[in-house]
Figure: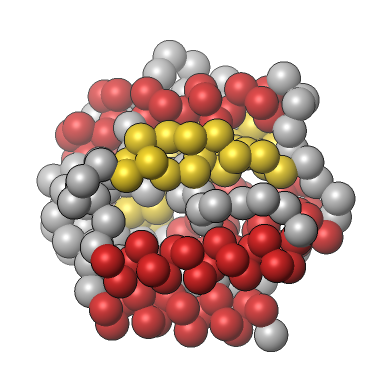
Length: 213
């Protein structure tokens, strides 16, 4: 029964759509990262396990969820309704069946789902991943799955937006089998803290540069 780690910062609008769509056997862990809109209360009311992480940062929330999880297989996904939890088995099944160590959900965007600056930024990140790992990866993959214990052992240090990039780099260095599977990507609910603005995209890019160093 995979645990699904959902970093959340003010996603009150999206949670009522996301959580009821969890496939059978997938257990949501909502990591509240300082929300002021009642996200934690909403998530609890919808049956999710709620973990509080007061230290701000996407990676900090992901790490707190990973530590709190107890299943052998863990999934990560954004909780803004841009990704459909119904697609989680596509990402988790290769790890569950031991045909992959890390699966990345490569986004196939609906029209209008990705601002131009975010799309360009993702292409740069994907190019860096290919250059540094030698793998044909086309997306950073915000929906992903891996086994919990090996993931903890990777020793990921970043606690901001460099977290998912560092995970791929460390997994590749450790010889993990990394694959991509396509997943639909829709316009998110509300405004993104990262890709919704040029400033957010630049901030995430700076974090990635720190990881590369």
